[in-house]
Length: 183
Image (cartoon, rainbow, N blue to C red):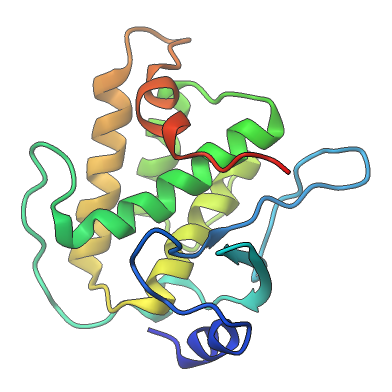
């Protein structure tokens, strides 16, 4: 967890409640409606409130040695908020950007994020996935094993939905229902 992120959100009237208004990463667009890659400074949105915060790196946020359960059928209730923060950010990125990423690309990005959590990629979605993980880990204690298990499960989900190289079933079946309508 990171007390400065929690404090910044609480000052904006946003609590780190895992309920329906759980914070997510706002998609940032430039004057030409092109999605901007993000770094440490992000906009966190919850309950209609947008708050700029600076997020620490993933590796600096690993806490403890808690072992996660297996996720054979998806997230358990205890981990649902972690999955939702990541997948809602991914969904909003695709909807707002007007470009649905393929299942294979989602699988690649989740695998890359798991292997190189503080790395970079030319695909701007990668920075949003990182930011979503960093946000969640700033609000909740997460061990390296839990991080690894969640990212492995997300990659597996993208692979499971895929029915070919250009397939976008993961977005249509799992992510699209999580998107936030664009105002």
